[in-house]
Amino acid sequence: MKKIVRIITVGAGFSNTLFSTHSPILIFLSGLNLQVDRVYMLISIVLVTNVIAFVIAYSLRKSTNNLQMQLRNVAHISMLTPCWLMSS
Image (cartoon, rainbow, N blue to C red; front, side, top):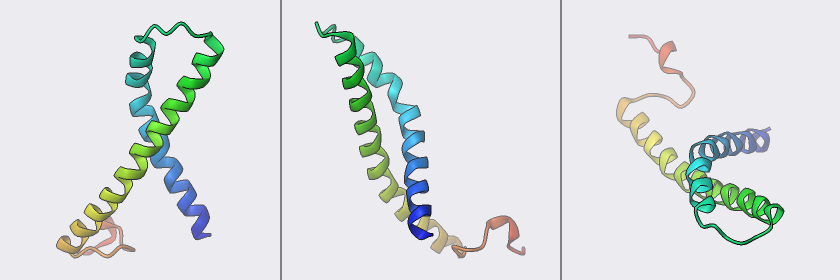
């Protein structure tokens, strides 16, 4: 079960990063005006955008997890207790 949750979490972060980064990458790659067949260009664009988005998502996930833990420790919030369930 933990492995499934981890895969879903990585996929969710990756899809959000892909959504945020694919447009600038596509604009950059289309501006190169390479003399390549369109099929090869499509395959390379899909590969490049996915690899870059995955690398960004994976590297940011580690730093955001650390920041999240530090903020929870400062605010004394339990990992299992959502903030709206905490008593005032």
